[in-house]
Length: 122
Image 1 (cartoon, rainbow, N blue to C red):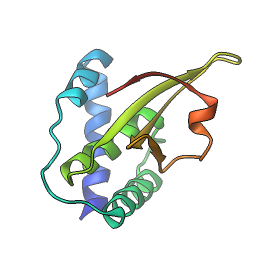
Image 2 (image 1 turned 180 degrees about the vertical axis):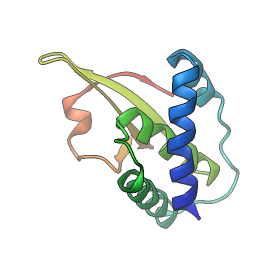
Image 3 (image 1 turned 30 degrees about the horizontal axis):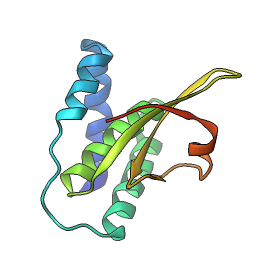
Image 4 (image 1 turned 120 degrees about the horizontal axis):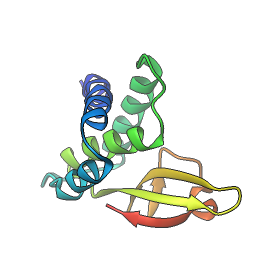
């Protein structure tokens, strides 16, 4: 079930990002509520796995912002206080988005926080 939600979420993100400016999507993420249900590591692992499989089956490549958007959405629906983090590296310039829970990057390479300076969290 979470896999199908992730797959649909990737599609919804594509549609919304084609119709709305980034600031609108960003504002929507900031307003997302967090469900009031207890969570555990199993929930986080299940959502991350579902997003990984959905990205593998999605007909186009899902980039970091899209992956972070749907991962954060699904985790917050499960009661996890997940945040999208936007960061950049100066030289060579690269921007990146990832998801953090309590300051820990999830479903991401372990050195992401050392490579990129944080622009914002939402």
